[in-house]
Length: 477
Ligand code: F6P
Image (cartoon, rainbow, N blue to C red):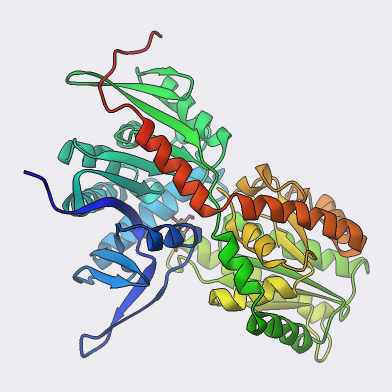
């Protein structure tokens, strides 16, 4: 019998909206944070699919509902599961492990057990939504066990997985006590997507070294009851809804707001901008330090130059994030104390998140955008900035450790660990000849407008469809 359900099901840790239920049982929601939502929301608004995910609050049992043109299926997590699966294993074990161990990962067996339990719940929820033979697209490191769990529940499905963050080198991945189970979990997919070719090759190397499976190029051969199944691992660099962002930045309201922002900041000659989740991977301290030293050296001066730093609240129960917040706020306070003047701060620091209209206005208002991540899967802020620079002005200073650096030639690439190098690049961006600014920005815009998120999802989903569904003989070693 044919199963009812959706032909496309996305499973992600978070739904695109965080839900709040008031005392009368009424529901309201606001957009949830992060690049994954930025990328997938437009894809799912166009598809007739379902999005399975957590609604952002503990113990929220809620029926599936429609919001913003999407069908959303909430998965409930208890407060303890949030602490162990989300804050613990996902964000205090896997996150630092995948980001060059910038902060030391913690390994706790109780966290791992919660991760397994919650992954099973997501797999069951996805299995319950998918039509016979449907495509299920699993998202990100929080759900690496879902592909194999889902395959054992629903062998009829075509399963894709996309890893939004870096995949670590073997030498680091090997620290994970449950490394074999994670690899097996991922290999339940037919296609495993990564941001950069280097991430895909890290994964293939991990498979070769930590399992007995045979690999050939980007293919891994996994034994099944009837023969072998091919799993493909490849890079699919993610993007944004570029034309929508471009159109937003062209609206009169956004242009007027951009002028107002500059005016309210005292019309500085040079406005620098940083926009990040408040995360230790983003290099926020390094960037602020470089800016502070440029002021110290009098290579930049207040009030001619100002830095706006938007640091949206993130993972606030995780200690490493609390510590980072303290450090950033002390640093900002010190620099403002030393270089600020009455009516003109050196750094305008905002610990808030803002809607896309305000972000577009900030990008449009800025002269120099600073993306200085120590390690980042892609960094969609860099692409949003470019899409918003409709007047072809604006210089992007971009870390070579962000996936976006592979694509965004036209940016000034920097190594954020090299503070002197970063200072030189910032100064160069500030003083760049307007003709060079335009030339670089046009190049960046061509790329970002062309390679948008629709193309990304189409490339991924058409590659997934092309993976043969018949068992095949194992490739020769
Ligand atoms: O892009 C990486 C990512 O971890 C996404 O999976 C997530 O949606 C986003 O960052 C924001 O993180 P969080 O859901 O932990 O707030």
